[in-house]
Amino acid sequence: MFGLALSGGGVKGFAHIGILKGLKAHGIRPNWISGSSAGAVIAALYAIGYSPNDIEKIAYSSYRGLIDLNYLGFIKGAVQFAIGTEISLDGLIKGNRIETLLEELTDGRTMREVNIPLAITAVDINDGRTIIFVSNRNRMDEVKGVEYREEVKISSAVRASISIPVIFRPKIIDGVRLVDGGVTDNLPVYILRKMGARNVLGIYLGYCGERRAEVDNIFEIASQTLDIMAYHITRSKSAGADIILRPNISDLSSKTLHRGAIDEYIKRGYMAIDDNIDMIKEAIKL
Image (spheres, rainbow, N blue to C red):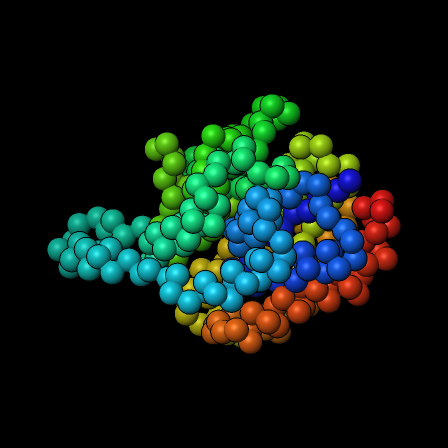
């Protein structure tokens, strides 16, 4: 029995679909699953019963039209800047369309209403606490700087976890302003141990020290900044994993998104499992 931790990574998160497809092809199914940011999306859908093929179909049918730019915020911010008052713009993308889709796909379920135990990370931007949405908090002991919640809709938890600072508006839940889980825990390994997993397989899609020449716009700069921060944090926090796979995706551009790009991310994720299956089985004691 093992837990599967899925990291953030923006559009690179499509590789997680290939990870799940590869595991299924080898007859392997995680007993616990966690995710941060893009990984939270895939983890949530899998936890409520969508198969890897189902998630792949959702990806192909839904990736267009999900970006709802915060035009009103832009205009208001420009006016505030012009007259010299405090700018209230808190994100370039509202995130309402993505949350609506997630609400439909999860049928309004809460974190408690899942088929396999689920954990999703987010961060309270006001005080730096890690907020972990879990399907059952009974096993969770108090840890300084960490708060566990379970009576939250899955769609709200995922929307909070994908809130890349500056890019997405924060998600406010019960008065708490939440941003991307990758700020403090991009690869949620230790929570799987707390939930009962004896062995943990981590899938890390973030920055690993390689040079990226295409970081030349506000979206790329914000994403790369978060990736670099998460990289240094993840190196210490992921020590509890029995094995961490890093799919070979560093050469793929995240500037444009189309069906062919999604295909390639999924293919690379699948290959990461297929090429390392013996090592994976040994590490997670199968």
